[in-house]
Length: 270
Image (cartoon, rainbow, N blue to C red; front, side):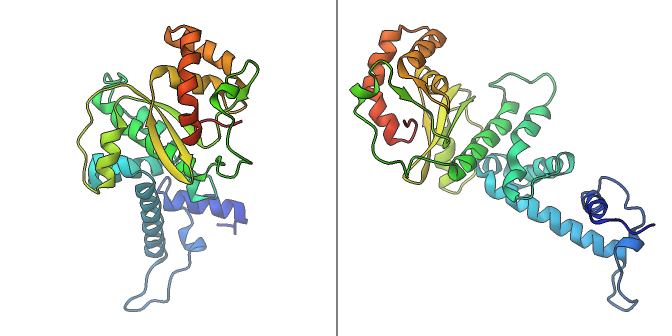
């Protein structure tokens, strides 16, 4: 086996430690120890490294997905994680990127014929989305360093006023109410499968604390209409009203009361 360049060697090593292919030319790449009582062959040394590498990746996923781990239990979670690592190895130089596709993987591997949004098999992917959203919001650019507080609600609702959804907000529609799940996980115990209850939520950060807010459908739709680039609050209200079957005036009236709360929760900014 000719001596590979660094890029080829890295690809070969990744394939070898993830077990995607038989490591051809192993003895030419991995040096074994001199023969002795406790010596290791090249294959044994690679196996130790591969096990350690996968174990670290599994630990990272376990730390980032506490809700999913609490529901699934350690053994099932490890099966989920091992399958994900083998099928979708990360190409991101940061471990933060490792879990980005975990929810999509769980969704894609759900049992056939059980694909309803509130089916029991949908819960693992939903929990993974919730866990990942919390991790992303923790790292995102938030509202903590903005120049000053938002204007009063009546000024924010003037025609032509623009607001936007901060980068530190993630909007989800889950098949269950996340409140009891999060409370059980915070207490450190296992959780039971939550009952079906489609729930729009916003994961947001305010004063450096991440929180999950269950929202009425119209508030979720309004935040979605705002977008991260921002738009006229009345135009967003009209789109939210159309999406939820309400009158635009009713949405604007409700915004008058809710906007100060939304700003304090880090859900909107200028």
